[in-house]
Image 1 (cartoon, rainbow, N blue to C red):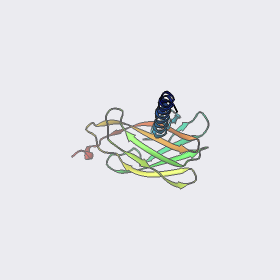
Image 2: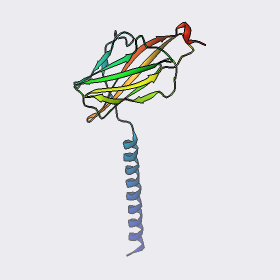
Image 3: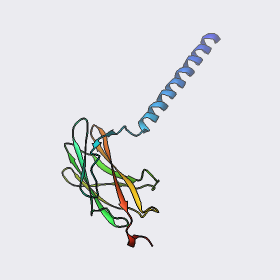
Length: 163
């Protein structure tokens, strides 16, 4: 084999190895990205402090979220129930945060209780504000990909909750 041919083969092999490594790295990065969540439409006038709220999804199916007791208290355990209607789930989780203030990591994986019903408990902390807007993000892992909905509600600090 001539030195020129050997050199061309080496360069071609190196280019193929770099391209294959780049492609493999890109596919690994893609695989590690969280899947896109299909967001459901939530009725604007729904208030979790008064009643369960529902979200409906473009491909069909709904989820109903209920938080008890009502009104939603602070520093007291609350039960969150997510009922799936026309959806099958591998798992359901909720994230609680505020659009006005980072409240830290507050994610809970709900436990299946019966067919299509998932339940969990959490505690909302007291905030420095007397009135606080919260967002409850429910994410449902379905066989066809994740769906989710965000429900907003407010809490008000009562006289006995401040030290």
